Amino acid sequence: MIYLIFLFIMIPFAMISEENYPAQYEQAMQKIKSSEFEAGLLQLETLEKTVPKEDSIYNYIIIQNIEIDIMLEMGLRFRGKYEKALEYGLKALNYLENGGKTYSDLVPFKKPLVIANISSSYFALGQYKKAKEYKDMLYKMYEEQSLPDEFKEQFNFDFIKVGNKNVIGMEFYQELPEDRYSSSFSKVIYHVFNTTPDGENGDKLYRLHVLMFHGEQDFAYLLTLRAETENGTVSQSLYDYTYKEEIDYPQLRKDIIKIVTDFNDMEKRNTEAQSDESE
Image: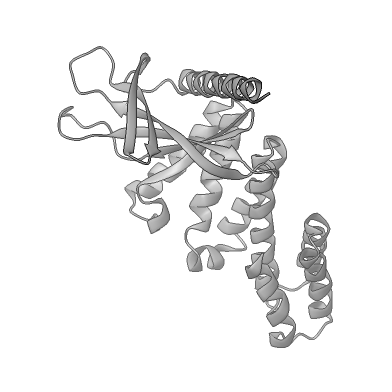
């Protein structure tokens, strides 16, 4: 919100406009500053339709529309409201590809961020073909070497809420190496977090790697649990969960949910046992 408030403070003094657009813009920004995001966004969208594109304030309206759409999309997705999150994500992408293209060029990580978040919501809704459409956009940008540093190696493609845990799936662009013994390679990593009261990520607990298997088997990847402890990284291979080179993503997602659910149940039993001992 610092970025939004900064524009709110500066723009009324910087703008020169024949109409009273700065005052209307300021009214919208006051609502945003007061956390009335949807009301402020609606007023900005209304203003966008009336302000001439050549007016100096027009680009600032587009920028704020993009920023608020991104913020609302992320908040809704973290609360599990994926369909509503998609509305804002798709709207932000439309701005970035059209009216906000200059802003997209100035802040290049915004477009891949929005594309990845859209993919995550489609995955969460089980619409895997739609999710792949947006993943393919990122792979195309990867092949064209047009991705910003923040997205050059990996991107978020999935988001799962399992009880009080947030699970974020990250995918790497690199393909499976021909030499299975050449390196340690994860095609996908799911990061598991505790959640804060507002549903956002808390402490990271552990990771689930779709890890290249070093050996001659009828599968390419083995799911591996990794966690950081005071003594270093702990790793455990989960041989019940293996995957071909062409990963079955719906099955992978089911497996991740089952594993995190099992850990949640175990955590609950441990908490209850400790509570009984203390009584």
